[in-house]
Image 1 (cartoon, rainbow, N blue to C red):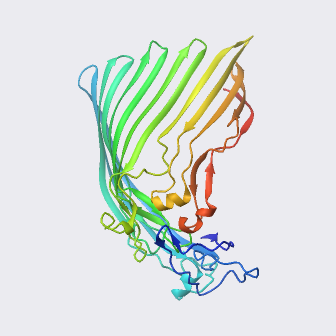
Image 2 (cartoon, helix red, strand yellow; image 1 turned 60 degrees about the vertical axis):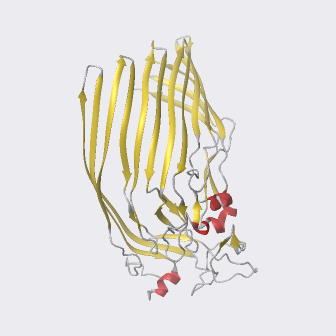
Image 3 (cartoon, rainbow, N blue to C red; image 1 turned 90 degrees about the vertical axis):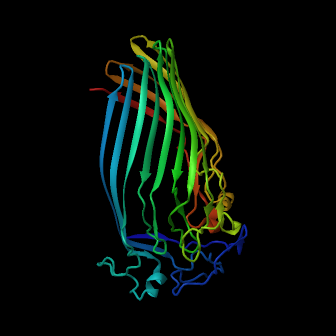
Length: 403
């Protein structure tokens, strides 16, 4: 049973956000906040119920059988195939809501401390699904140290039942991947791998936070998307110096419109292609929390210091900006996460089976932003959003022994 405090004093919210009408700020049947002697005004998202209570039994059952095999066509050409057959069964039972929710159901508040499920408002039928995924890959070993390949594969993520009682089930989302690439080594000096891929994503599962539900939400199927990407990694050895790097570029976009939730049914509208008032994100909108480029580059020196082996390494991490929410209005309120660059440095000595390393991570103590979120619906709480930063500057000494 989890409790989540929501009794903070907040400023009033505007009546309208980017043309979308906010719900009435009617108060609940009981007031757990007790008083507001200094004249503060309550955010209608809180409705003066101070705690959100969950007493849930949520079960995830997954069963699968898979097989894979490789057939050598020639001494240099081989074909690999695989299949995975699965069955998923997900269910949720119990209570999710505030005290006024329980009172409206005729339940005793507070709940008995020694009894679970004394009040139930979530007892939906279990979600069941069966299906299969598969892959086929062709690899050509051009030379002993150079190989090219092509792969076709599919994937899935099971659907399920939402914890929020007012929301129904959501379906599995599926991915179809087409990939070509190579893996090479050149004279024991350069290792270089590269892959290019195109992914079709259908039934995209996405979490939404509807207004008036205390920051709690559920998963919906947001339509279809596609990803065009390329990724690479390499190591280049030049005597005592090694230059290493890896990176990926991804262009991920919706391929169909994503509709808003119907506030009465908490099911996405289906007419946003003709009714712009019901549109959350148009076809072509970037997928959130995915920088177009992300990579790292390292330079390392390995040498000798008397009878000791010594090394020094500098690593740069970089990524470009990303959006924070698929809904374009909500993303405008929350804001993008900007790109950033950070550096790590380490140096040390070793001998026989021991190593002593001095290191500093995030050398210049940058506050790179990985993601943003809010503790309640973005329309209400974007002014007090939470940011997940990269690890702050961290340094130390590390001693290790290999046995």
